Length: 252
Image (cartoon, rainbow, N blue to C red; front, side, top):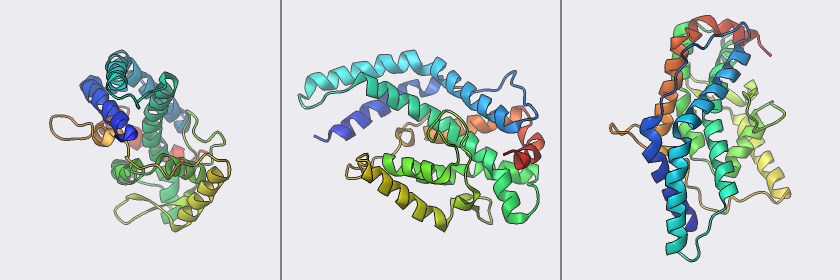
């Protein structure tokens, strides 16, 4: 029995049960002149909303599934502390990925085209961040960690704040799809080597991907896409794309 796949399946099943409860919105949210700070507050608010709507039901289901697996398979055991930490990271990372990349687009666009991005193009590019998001969702966890450390200038790394991405690590193609530059692949390898030196590298373990890829609604839309669309709806609700492109270009 593959313990990792069993646990992954239980996690996916629990998430599937709470997916219909998730509805993220921006009702009453006000953007400030510091657009980056506004997005950071919005990301935290989205994480809080998600947890409030799903937490009790998710853990009720997931603990029961884990207990049942532990009773059925003598080799299976779980660590409640790890499970809590893992889910907290996953939820935070999802919303901070969406909003960190959306916040970063105006700077990257101006670097490439020497002009500020128009609202229509900004909206299109924000909708396209899932192309890279899906690639990252299939990374081995430690490779993903290496990606964050290689591309983010945020000193705290995997902290609950918007990542300040390095423009040299990314590019926008002609269709305004965010993609990785050739430079970043070398930097990721360097960060992987650092993890290996510290004895914190586990890439020998099988890569399964994000469970959000397999949690789907009645129309077959996966959880990653559902949450992304809800984030975009929130930004539309506060006229974000019309008001914040210039502010984000100037922010540090």
